[in-house]
Length: 102
Ligand SMILES: [Zn+2]
Image (cartoon, rainbow, N blue to C red; front, side, top):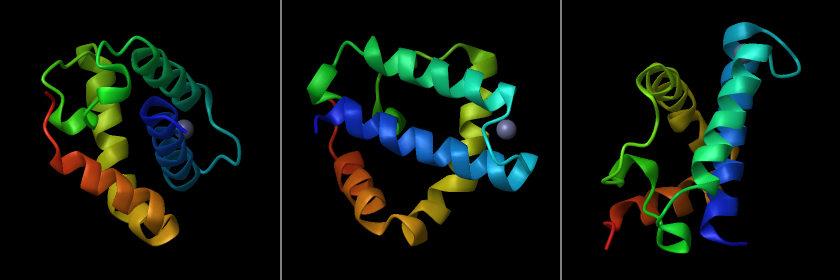
């Protein structure tokens, strides 16, 4: 699996977790599925491709302001919880997050 696919999976899990707990919906609500579509679209267009740093370390802030605020809330909520639910995935993400964009 390449970096972009992995990032997509991480962001999807984070958004699903957030939506389930915060919006109490079993499937993604329209607001969150819009956010997920947007996040995936940004990843598809990421100019770094496979060399992509995690979004936190990325020198390009490609999210539009409103969306960035929403995704930040998701990451803040789901980030720590991911460690318990998907430790391997979260740790991989953390380690990768230590690398800087080249
Ligand atoms: Zn939601």
